[in-house]
Image 1 (tube, rainbow, N blue to C red):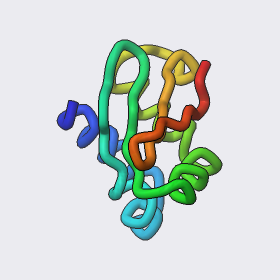
Image 2: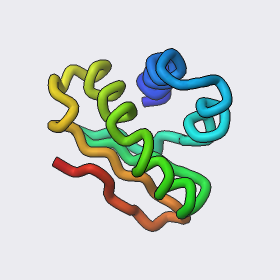
Image 3: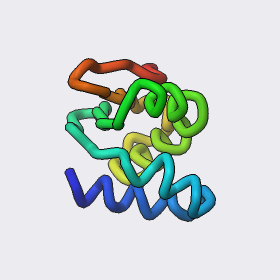
Length: 91
């Protein structure tokens, strides 16, 4: 699981500025990966909302590419803050 997340980080890092990567992507932690869904832990609600607005597609595409689910819209990502899941971009 951590290996996949590190590979995702490498893909994402090539597509965003260093400052945005350090601010918005680096703090994310992978909580679980099962079938075609991933749960990512983020620091707070504001962080979750900002990621939903700005990086959902990029994160889904990176995971889809690595785990072989084909098109990104077949992959589900969830951001969790404080143990309460908040769904994003479910297909």
